[in-house]
Length: 123
Image 1 (cartoon, helix red, strand yellow):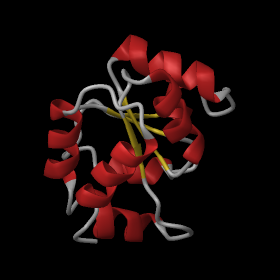
Image 2 (cartoon, one colour; image 1 turned 180 degrees about the vertical axis):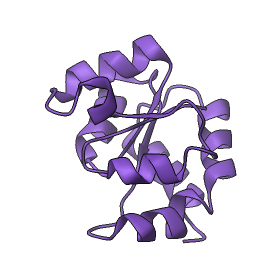
Image 3 (cartoon, rainbow, N blue to C red; image 1 turned 120 degrees about the horizontal axis):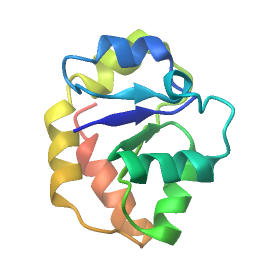
Image 4 (spheres, rainbow, N blue to C red; image 1 turned 180 degrees about the horizontal axis):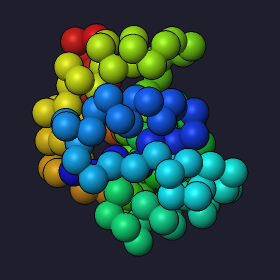
């Protein structure tokens, strides 16, 4: 599973997690660091990425548009790159992968909230 790391996540995080999510990219590395959300959304669809973000906007787009792409919304507040890596993504990489592989389009906020709550329940 390939992740597209949004601008609000450090490019360093993508490099730290490269072994868990091979083929992933950061929006900066593909020239989309100043792009509108819609352009990033289309890029993710066209290139087979799931979007990893701390930005609620992608969650809102997924509610309106469904999938693809899958969206993983990290609701962590302000924290360091090391905290994101250690507390969520590394510990939950298998769950994130299973979530993206097994869930179809989700269009209702409570379904998405439930899925993400379950996904991150061990944090």
